[in-house]
Each structure stands twice: as structure tokens, then as C-alpha cells.
Image (cartoon, rainbow, N blue to C red; front, top):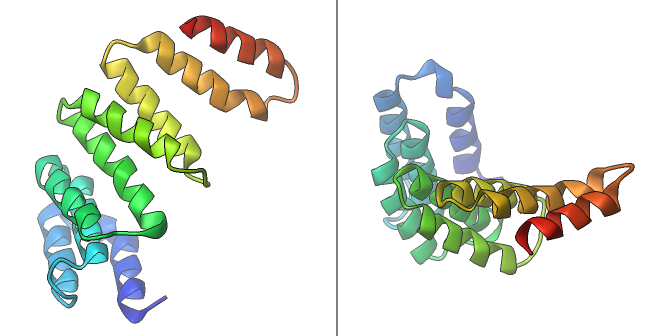
Length: 159
């Protein structure tokens, strides 16, 4: 972990000690140390806007971070956070599309988060049965009993 990443993590750890505008300003100052359009800096700035209820600004910054080549685990986090932000902005269909695409991109420890936010977006688009089926399929592998009936019921919800 670089010194810059440690300082960014410390700033996030102190989130509650700042008012929203102060936190965004502190993050802007930190990001200003990086090259313009640095994808990690853009992601952190997007996250700061998102965390302080500035979703419109956050969405633009998430898109810029992804377009600038944000990679690794941060890329997936940015997609999840962008999709959540879009849902909050009333763009649930775009959120569904992003998260469906993300599910097809591979698997990692964030699969459950992708499914959870996809279920929320599906609910906002009126596809509650599909959302419940998705969550039941995600839950089934963790059940010590009744896995097969739960998977069967999930399949039955969506035909």
C-alpha cells in the first residue's frame, strides 16, 4: 500500500469527524496530488461525493474513473457503487444493465454485493419476483438444510 493509499484510508476512517463539504474538500486536496484523471483518484472522489449525498456528481466521477481504466477490485466496487447511485437517481434500468453485465464478468468476493444491488434495482423496475429469486439462489448455498427446495422455489418464481 502506498503512502497516498494509507492517507486516503485514514481520511475514510475519519469520515464521521468531517461535515460533508469538509470531507469532499479534504478528498479533493488528496486527489489533487495525483495526475489529472488518475482512475484511483477519480474513484475516491466519486466515493466521497456518493457518501455525502452528491449522487449526480458521483455518477459522473465513477464513469470517468471507469473510462480512465480503473482496474482490479476497485473497478468492481466502482461498478457496484455507480449502479447503486444510478438506482438512487431513478435510473434503475441502467443499474440493472450494469449489474447484469458485471455478474457475467467473473466471480469474486463481491458477488453477493452485485446480487444484492441487482435485486434492489430489479425491485425498483417492478420485477420483484426476479429479485426474490436472485436472492434465494444467492442464499441457497449457505443453507445447512433445505438447499434444494429453496433453489427449486427460486426457479419457480421466474419460470
